[in-house]
Length: 393
Image (cartoon, rainbow, N blue to C red):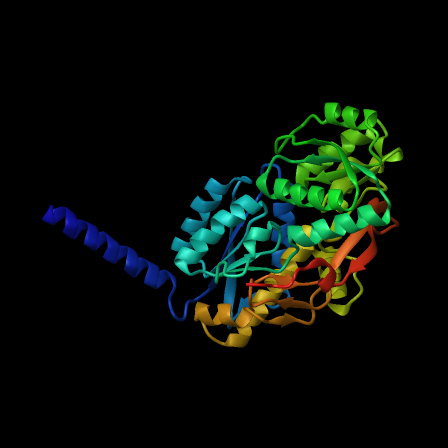
């Protein structure tokens, strides 16, 4: 027993020594661990996020605190377990911060690891409201949208269009189910009838029976609570029976250029919350779009824009601290203001580590060269006080 105890103590000492060297006070490189979906239902977002981060790093000469930035990317396969395993390995290998994920389930799992290991964690895609709550993780920050703000925009659209009967289709995933539940309750309070609801599994490939049920219903609006490949498949199959010609198709975050490209012409007219858009008029966004197009010969997607914006903000704050003390980075980011965001001014709330920002709402339209064939036309901008609740608690 004594020998076993000594062996364990020795192993722990070695681990502690390794961790100390991996997170040295003045390391040779600034290591970022990127955990995103490169496969699975949300795999279409991961590569764009990687591109956005790449531009953010290149625009600052590839350095922070005078040291080169090194990013190691891992695919979480849109699943929490691989996200945890790969995050743990990245931290053990010396990552000074974690970036990701796409799926809210993966992000919530990563949050726990980051909190235990006291490693800063940046979120630019996952929208589950539970990621940023008062009294939540000290180490996790989100610079992108929440489900709450997207739900409020979708409800506002429903009311403004005077839709009376809604059919809901929600991916069977906790975050989207929570979003639908809130929308359903608030819609019913406003006198809007929910005439049907379906909850297909994440990654579903056949929506034909659901589209047929909607066509046979008396719904005047179709609310879609899904994204990624689910959104592409659902809207494409709805288009095969011209559902969009007789019903308003919309969702909190159903549409962007990626979805429209996958669906084609029947995506025109679909309305949605938009997390970022390359047409936003400001100097920062103009510079980002130019750099992105020069490097990748395409316009940045919402996933790319949010990743760029969040990473640029984070690295600027780290540089201003002038220290390798992670606790100082966390303290500085809480309550910081991003005046030159590509989406307009953003303010990080110290109470819950959520960035206050404008909410964008758009409709898919035909693009004009050199734009993609189908683009989001931003038709409404919601100020922060209309889409965020006060940070109580």
